[in-house]
Image 1: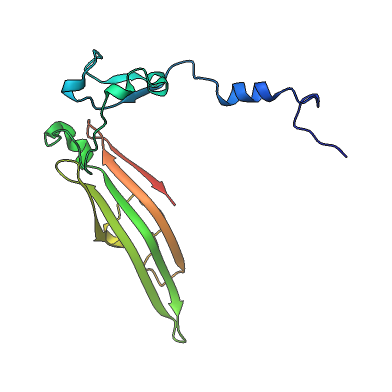
Image 2: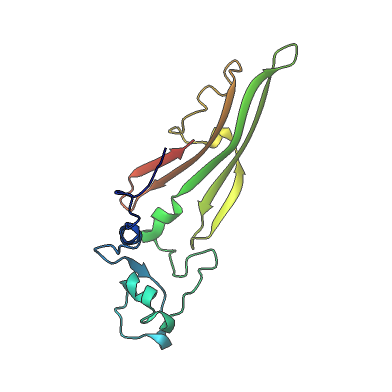
Length: 172
């Protein structure tokens, strides 16, 4: 029995595979970088240019990329950036409830941490609890009820957008 990944078994489709793997997108990808004032090279003030220029090295050596040092590198303390500070991440690393022992004692344990953004976008984690989870969180509704068996892990992210509309996502 013989098998081949070639359409006609001739082994001449390598060029087609190369074309598929390295085919450039029809619209160039954009990349944002920070440009030091002394190194500006005539681009628009947004510092956005097609990624192809980075790949070919046309102007990429003239730019320096700066790290945000775990916080925003611009002033975001104004009310127009409240949407950043509204983001809260609940990481339910482990929540477990079960009956144990000969008398059916209810054993509960949970590790929940809450991630938030500060005034300047600095992110931090702090201990939290099952009781602080938003009402839209799913999976622990029966926590504390007559000790049903529960094992749960999830990440729940909630936010308010710039118009104040509530949104959330949960991954179990």
